[in-house]
Length: 468
Image (tube, rainbow, N blue to C red; front, side, top):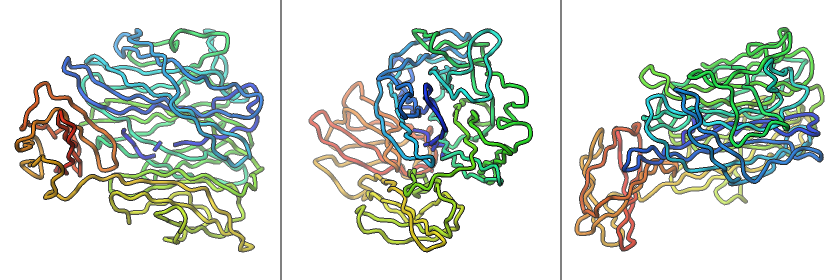
C-alpha cells in the first residue's frame, strides 16, 4: 500500500456534532497484480472518521464505492463494500471519535484515462463556512475521491497530518508526513472540498456532478472564505512542502473544513491524485486530558515514525520511550514542548516495537500517551538458508530488470512479492508449474524485497531480492 508518509492516519476534531458525523475521510489503494486478461487488481480502502457522541449519525456496516471513467465521467462499477474495522480513539476535547475502514479488492480493465473512485456521506459539520451549491446539491455532505491509473501499476501516496488544531492566540506550526512506495514525485495542494450528499438524496452509488475529465464539482464557500483562505481572509493557512509543515493562524474560533489533494507525478506526468478532507478546529479551550494519541508506522529507510498531538499546553519537555515487549520502556530521546513527531532509525527486522511519549509538565508531573506499535516484518534474509526441499537460486543479484528464479527439483505453483515492511506488492499463480521462471523487477523502486515461493504440495520458502 502506498504510503506517502504524510501516512496519511488523521484524527480530526469537532465541537458539537449532534446530528452530524463526518470529520475526516480519504481513500487508500494498493496494487496487487495484473490478471491474465490484463485487468489491474487493486485493494481499495475508504477511511472515515465520525463523532460517536450521543445524537450523531452512525456509520453503516457497508457503503457504496462508485468507480467512474475519468474520460467520460460515466459509472463503471458500483460496489457495496463492507466495513473492515472500527476503533475509537481519544482527542483533545474529551469527545468520542470513531474510525471506520471499508475495504474491497477490485479488478479494473485497462484504460488510457484511468478511473475515479468515489464515496459520498452525509453530513459535514453544520457550522462549516461551506454553503449550498446553486444547483441544489448541498455542500453539507462529504465526498471522498481518488484517481487510479488505468494502465500503470500504482499505490496511493501516503499522507498523514494528525490533529489539525488552531489556537486564535498564536500561530501554530503542525508537521505532516508524506511518502510514496513507487518513488513518484509528490505535490500537495489545498483545494476546495467537493459537492457532498444529503440525507434526502440517496443514490445506489455515489452521485457526482462530473465535468469529465476534471472530476466532480467543488463546493462553494460563503463570502470571506475560499480554498486559499478556508479559515477566512484574515487567517493564515499555508503549506510549506520543503519543511513539511502546515502553518495556521486564525483570529477567531470555530470549525472549518479543508481538503488536501495529493498528486503523484511519474516522469513529469500526472498519474494519480487523492483528496483528504478534514476539519480544522480553532479553539481557546484545550482539554486537560491525561492521555494523548500516537500514530505509528514503518518507513522505507527502514525507520519507525510516530506522530502525535498533546492536548495540554503546560508541557516543559517530552521524552520518547521505546520497548520490544510493551512492558519495559527505555528513554531513547528528548524533545521540546511543541514537537509532535519523531523518526527512529535504530530498528531491525522481525521485531515489534512499542513507542510512547512522556510529557513532563512545569510542575514535574508526567503525562503519558497511549502506545503506538510499529512492526518491521522481514523474511529469511540468509541467502544460504534452505527451507523444506526447495533449493532456490535467484540470478543476477542485485537485479535491475529481469532475473531468473530457479527452485531445483521442486516445481513452483505461485509466488508473492513483499516489501521490507511486509506489504504485498504483487502475487501471481503460475499457469503451469515450473522449477524456473523469469521475474520482472523493473516496476519496483530500488530497495530490499522478498519473494515467497509456493509449491503445489504446500512447501514455502522466502528469498531476499536486492533491487538497484
